[in-house]
Length: 87
Image (cartoon, rainbow, N blue to C red; front, side, top):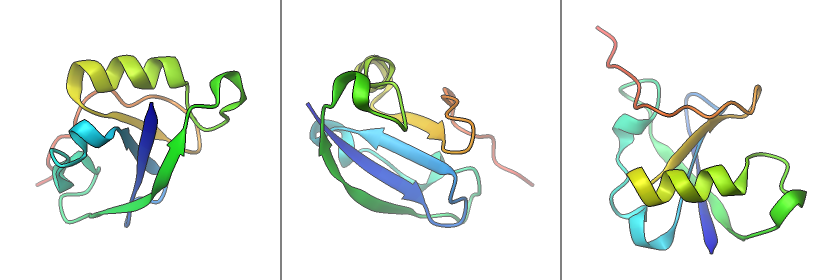
């Protein structure tokens, strides 16, 4: 599997991982701020246990079920749900 990795432009600690099949379905609402945009970081192959930024197994399961995996770069915590729109 190749991971397509995106970073939210405004919230630099928020990353979104998907695959080629689901990339077109990503939208800007996935970022924490309503006016934020996704910037593609790159496409990377699997590294297994060597991957530092996120758990590949968790990312694969999340991509299979919802089309993407989102995580915070500071805490490496998975962020499972879409953020709520702020007033």
